[in-house]
Length: 130
Length: 76
Image (cartoon, rainbow over all chains, first blue to last red):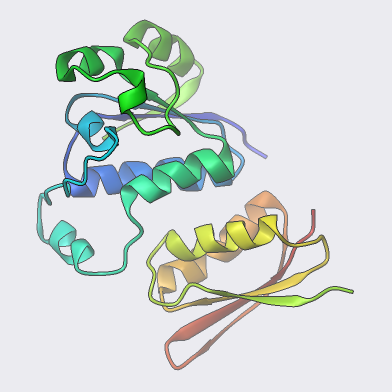
């Protein structure tokens, strides 16, 4: 079985991109691949505990998805961790800018990490950017 | 004695039915037969692919009135 590592970088706050990133992370993780996710920029605020803001859609597809029973991207990220042992890292820079501490983020996220560590982690993997 | 479990993923979209199957597999025994119900055609194509990759036994897929029935056996 191919076990190449999947590194997912999520910077967008749009529904379609968050959804696709969550699908890659969850399906990859439950298929036996090592998955590492790095959340930064506009993607991070959705992982602040208690933030119920809906991600805005970019186009018609996102609008359609919002009206159908598509699994929520946050649920998929959580399943990636619980069912597939994915590791999801919040970007420490984005946390500083937002003014949020580790305890303020969803508990299934790993400890904050910086780009240096993530780039090191991504060295031997495929990188997917959303 | 192996039992047959129904995993009802009807109404959900990819990868919802797959995730529901994985949850059901966690609480199943090796040798158990499971049947996934899905109204999402993408999942009907994707689940056998996943079974093959991960190493569970894929038995069959049938479609009736817009519902796909994917039958499999937990192999490990």
